[in-house]
Length: 143
Image (cartoon, rainbow, N blue to C red):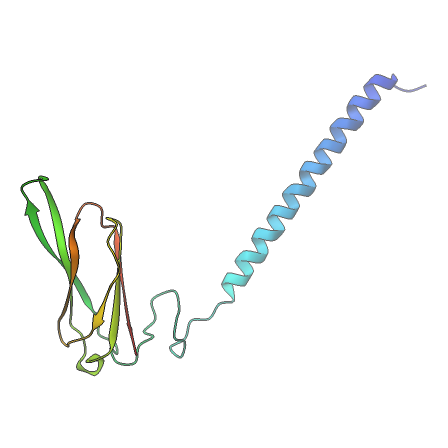
């Protein structure tokens, strides 16, 4: 005769719920797999003008790495160290006269822009930035 109708409905509902959950999980895994596969196919070469990773994209600098340092001082009023600017050094003379953009992450620092003067270029903030808040820096040299 079979199980009572109420047991059959609960079991059926449980099976349907598990199937829906499994289907949703498969969709999520499939989308993640496509994303990873797409990212794995990205090629970074020296001929690109913009790339992520550690590839030299500027022809003026060559193999030498640009050194980045900060002009730090102690602010007695706030009792904190602050930076008033960014110093770029070890710049190849072939970059002389090109434009640069320095982005400092953290500390609400504005982007700094200007023209490269090799071998050392200094960019100054309009207002000091907390040293503790700075987490990263990015430098772009372009025509």
